[in-house]
Amino acid sequence: MTESVGGAGEPLGAEAPVRVLVGSALAKGATRLQGAVLMVEKGQDDAIHQVRVSCRRLRSDLKLFRKLLAGDWAGELRSDLAALAQACGETRDLEVIAALVRETANSEDDEEHVETILTTLTVGLDRASARSAEVVLGATTAELLETLEAVAAAPDLKPTAAKPCGEVLPELLDAANLKFTQEANKLKPWTPDDDWHEVRLLAKRVRYAADTSASVLGDEAKATATQAAKYQELLGQHQDHCAAADALTAMAEDAAAQDDPELSFTLGRLTERHRAARRPLREEFLSLYHRP
Image (cartoon, rainbow, N blue to C red; front, side, top):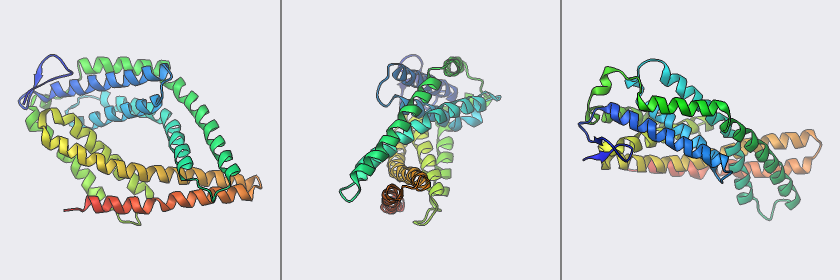
């Protein structure tokens, strides 16, 4: 199989040195992040989320290829990308929580209380969005993009990066899969939320690793990416409900402290609704994961 790297230039096949794929993956990641930053600059919908996704995909590729990368540059780059993603995290969380509250509120809930909750979340979202945009459009992010462009053009790699893609990639993808299965095998319906969240992150890492490898490994890697995406989707819904429950609990505590027990009661009802939503998602994941 032969495909172009980055859409043009040297063809990439199983016999090509893996360093070619490393440079290609970093170049594509840098382009993707630059596009997301431009979306923020234009004020487009979902822009902050796309910045976060772009950072995570780049960090995943750096993780996938870590044994091939020489020096400390990759660790520093991963830290910078993590900081940028974290700066966008609150915005994304509040977007999801507000949407879930709108979706799950029903006629049994006090309409005025629900509007108060949504207003509070919206105000918080607006403020978080402004803070995120300031970071994304700031000098530090501009420097990060310049660094990514330079690194992608000439990454500092170990001699093992000269090995063929067809030899190296299966081992790297198997390692990501192994870590995921080790942790997924531990999950039970009563396992703490944080452990479920960790497996979600590992599923996402497998998906991204398989996506990156698919140009060489073909259908097998594509199938792995598809399966990992299914796991990620279920576990992502689970994490959204966990985040909503935690946020609403904090709001209920604030309402109680402000001597508003009725609002606190409504918040408590919504919280329990999101906590209850975890169970069927856990059962669905376990059924899918253990399916022969």
